[in-house]
Each structure stands twice: as C-alpha cells, then as structure tokens.
Length: 139
Length: 139
Length: 139
Length: 139
Image (cartoon, rainbow over all chains, first blue to last red; front, side, top):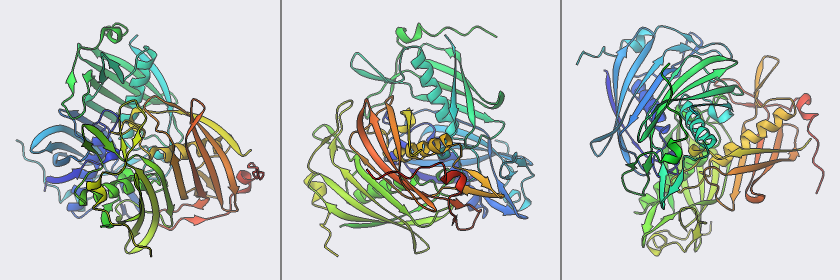
C-alpha cells in the first residue's frame, strides 16, 4: 500500500478574513491525512514501543496553492508515498475540489523516540509499519 | 528595506501532544512576520485601494525543521526579501533560538484583489508599497 | 427538529503539550456541530439574503470540562436547542466518549448582517430557517 | 498580586470569513494572559515538581462578546483573580480596544499532576505559587 484517499469538509474556523481557507490549515489537513493513512495500515502516528513514545516529527513541509478553498467546500485529499527511507517517510499530497486540483503539498516525517525535555531521537521505522508500506514504483 | 527581524514567544496553544510546537504554526509565524515587515514599511497586508480590498494570498509556502521549539521558547524570526516580482513577493525566513537556527522557511505571496465569491485576481504591487522594498542584491 | 448528533475524531493538531485536547478546540467543535445542525435543516451558517451576507456571530460561549480528550479519541457531540429567540439561538452541547460525558458547553449565536468594516447588525432569524426549528419543550 | 494587564495584536490567522476574530481565539488569548500573569509572579504554567510535571488544565471557560475584533486591532487584556482555591484558580478577563470593552471572559484552572495516559490528578497549589497571589478583596 502506498496510496490513500480521504475527504475533508472546510470548517468555518479554517477560514480567514480573506474569505478563504488559511494557508496554514492545509498543513494540518496533510498531517491528518497521513495519520489516516497510517491508521489504514493498522498502525498509529503515536504509539508506544518497548515503553518509549514513538512519534513522527516533520522535518520538511511545503504546499503550493492554485485556487483558494472556502467554507463548506468538500476537498478530496490524495496521499501518495514518494519515498520510504530507513528512518523517514516522504509523502505527496494533492487537494481536489470537484475533481479539479487546487493545491499540492509534500511532507517528510521522521520516526523518532520522543522523550520529554530531551532532543527527539530518530530511529529506524519499526518493521511492523515499514513492511506494510510498498516502495513506490518509479513513474 | 529588504530585511526585518522580529521575536515571538511560544504559547501553550502552539504546542501539541509531542511536547513541541506544531509544525503548522511556523507558517502562521511567517505570515505574521511578513505582516510586521509590511507594517514597518508603513503599509498593511489588508488594505483598500480604489474601493477594492487588496490582500496577499500565498501561492507557495515551505518550511524545514532542524530542532523542535517548545512552550515558552523565545524565537527570533528573520525576514528577508528573496525576490520582488511585479505581482508577487518571495520571502525567506529563519527561526533562531538562543542564536541557533532551528527552522527556515519561504513563502510567496501574490498581490490580489479579493472579491467575495469570485476568483482572487492578481494585480501589480502598488508602487507605494513596491517603491519601499529594495531589490535584494545578489549574495 | 431541535436535536442533532454528530461525531468527531480528535486530530493531532487539536492537542497540546499537556497531552490532551486544547480546551479552545471544544469551541470549534461546538461551532462546527452547530453548522452541521443548520445544514441538516437545509440551510447554512453563511448565506446570502437579498444580496446581503448573513452570519451568526457568537455573543456567548462556555464549556465545562470533566475529563480530558486525547489524540485519536472519537467524540460524540450532541446538539440541543435550548432557546429559539427572535434574533438569536442558544444551543447546549454534550461531548461523550464511549458513552461517558467528558464536557458540556453552550453557545448563543445572533443572526446578523455582516458588512465589511461596519458593525455587525442583528436581524430577525429568517422564517425559512426559524420555521424548521421546533421550540424545545420544557423538560 | 491579583491583577495583571497585557496587550495583544490581532493576527491574520486569528480571523475568519466573517471578517472578525474567531470567537475560539479569545480562549487562547485568555490562557496566554494567564500564563503571563504566572510568569510575572516568577513561576510558569508548566513546571516540574519533585520529578512530576505540573500543569493547569481548565475545568471551565466562558466568554461574552460585545463587539467584534478585527485584523490589526490592538487589544488590552486585563486579568483579575476572582477566587484562589486550594487546588484551583478562577480568573476574570476583560478585553478592551481603545479603552472600550469588547468582550469579557472567565476561566477556572486546576493545578494537576500530568502523567501520560493517566487521569490528570488535582493537587493543592504549591505554596511558592499560592503565596504570591493575594486573595482578592471583596468589591
């Protein structure tokens, strides 16, 4: 599995004075879509492993906006694995409204041990997650 | 003028369960720093021109994260103009804590007429704004 | 109709460093549940009437929290009309997880004409909305 | 000490499609003002005590809105201690713009030990905090 589609309806609190969805919200939409993808794989973005809390801090995130979204819009969000690394995942995202792409983004998350007040520590993606994600084939 | 520095203290609502600032908040930090830059130039991100509302929707935004920020951290935010286009501005941002860079980002905003329920319409940056921004010199 | 139930799954961005849902998010949850209630009635929270934009600014909002919600929790949200006024609606909300109430809130929204840069102006709730909402019977 | 004043400038991301500050943001403003009050007392909302993480989850929050705030507005926020309990604090908040009150709110926070995945556990407010807060005198 290396693809996942979900939907999201724009809420009032997602919008700003410009009458459109605040651009920062698309990053929340990407993250939640990533989590739904992990959940569809049977895992979670926050889990415990040998008594340690595992998380996926982002090291890079980007988005390009073609057309604004507004309150009440129903967006289709397409998640695609671009790269499965040893310790990190890079995802591509497309946002569509009525079949037309309005934005596309990307995000790289690193599998880490999270300890309060310490530096986050990258670890190899546990095999029970990694094994469920297919290497994307070259286009 | 093509550089501007500001500061921001991390609030509790900026953080997430991972104990760190949610990555999407850095985009809000960039936007507000951009607005403070425009304000320092004597203009505003939202203004009226010949009875029309002018705004700066983003067409691209990106951020790379080196080290997480936490509740109470005081960040220095450096805004730099990377490119002054006819209708758009591209800014680079650096986030520092105690003098050490923890994230860097970029954002491209397009000067637009905002009309409710219509497509946003790009226009040339008004000269009373554009004239105040120096072309950055090549490094 | 004066009751409406919906569900909402807690997202990562809803949480804070305390490991729980940030208390301010419950107000967003209430608002979106109200909008879904209006949508179930066949109307919308943002609509145009005789060329004017109608909205429902809040004049009061409150919430009491019994037990914290965490990332991944599935909340049931119960919307109940407490009072149908001439120009305003007061709603009660209950938040349940696994059948147990974890929070309850209330919100009063006033039907208004929204004009840019002017004061919001309360108006009687249009009959095509008001007629669809039953007066709640005294308990 | 039982009073504290602070200021806050409305950011673009605070606003919504109605052209005004989203009502849920006032709760973030209250929380940050509370934290600044605690900081002015020489303590913090998040601290460690005997190896345990102490926090102040909210058990109640409310706000009444008289007049909307908009992008760029400078708000004065007045924090007043209404009640100092053994384990909880209740604060009143007033929001003013140009000397005129536009909203008022209240919040009750309980001093708690926060342990991951366990119920938050209320504890008496540590004396080094409690001693610095004067009982408000009856008006």
